[in-house]
Image (cartoon, rainbow, N blue to C red; front, top):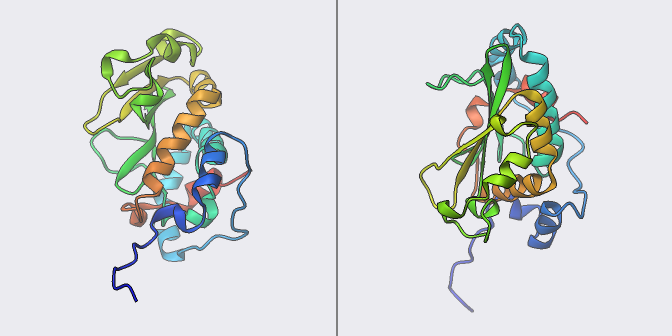
Amino acid sequence: MSTTPRRSTTGLRQFLNLEQQRNWIEGKTSLRDADERSESMELRFKYVARFQKLLRRPQAQEVLKILRLYGQNCIPIPRKSERRYWSVSCLPSTSDKPLVRVNASWMELFTLYADGEGIRARVLVHLSDFTTDHSPVQGHLDEAFLEHCVTTPEDVGYFFPRGEDIFGIKVRGAPSIHKFLATRHVLRAIRRFNLTHMNRGRNAYHASHCYSLADYLLEG
């Protein structure tokens, strides 16, 4: 009998095989999620005050609307994977002062900020999904396509975080954020990046999960 240790299955591979994951990325299937959520009441109460503070911000309703859209389209089996493989933070105490942030593993996925009375978003994806030849080469970035994904070209910007094949996109204004998240190629890229990190193992930010925000993200 072989004594070679069996490699443990990590991340969402415990629930979804590679074919199911590929089909979800391409929008070819609807995944069966859990009927109920596993919840920590202690953690829910911990961030109630922050959530109430967010609700008093002028951007609150638009933030909740966009979070709902993001949850419906960008996170696979969100109830089954909640907190363990993704989390959402409310007014996290980081230097960039976000309103909300979605994380998986050790990676930021999606962040919303105040922009005056409005909002702006930051999304991390694979660079190779936004180059003209699908390579992770910065000089091959398809800027024309990025500008096509928002209502006006001035609403989109980008940056190159540290790490292989990682690309950051900044989108300003609710109309452009909605259009960006509704663009088929963008949605496919976001799903691929999110699965990459949800498959890496347990979420490092589970202790900052805000259930009150997740209530909205999981609606629909």
